[in-house]
Amino acid sequence: MQAISRVLDRINSIEQRFGNVPNSVTDFSTVLATAEKNTSISGQNNSTTNQQKNSDNISNIIEFTAKKYGVDAKLVMAVAKVESGLSPDVVSTAGAVGVMQLMPETAQGLGVRNSKDPRENIDGGVRYLKQLMTTFDGDVTKVVAAYNAGPQAVQKYNGVPPYSETKDYVAKVMAQYK
Image 1: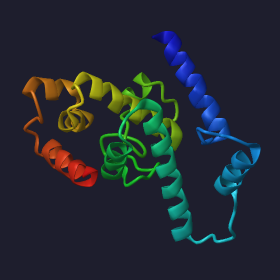
Image 2: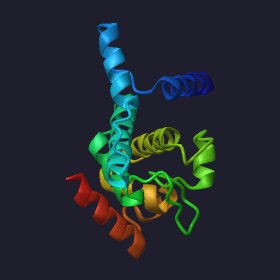
Image 3: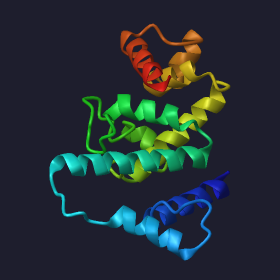
Image 4: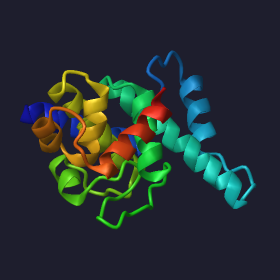
């Protein structure tokens, strides 16, 4: 497993350096067009345009990472929207950081070095969702509850824990997910 983790870390590092390259690259012009689109500066510097670009970039990272780990991109997007509104800069009062609101200990356990880096944060969050999907046999409600309250709480109550915060969280994510 350590070898696989090292390979995945290396792949993530390369992806961060070169950005999201299409899976079925057939020619250099496709790669170039994608790179130009992702790095072009349109001259429109208003905050709404920049926010839209950031949101589009976050959405692209979510799509790519979800596919990479075999997790439903709609579920990842729902979790990310409820957690942070897709913002890499949000820090909760509990100390959770970034788009998918990783707690420092969770981020560290997932090998995330910079939780404010959307790529690293989303990669860690999606890997965590994948672990939870395995733990809870694909039961999305339990996975979402565990993402919020921790897997131990979900196991203890054999479902959504009776915490109002977690119940509200699950309802919000599931409403986004449908």
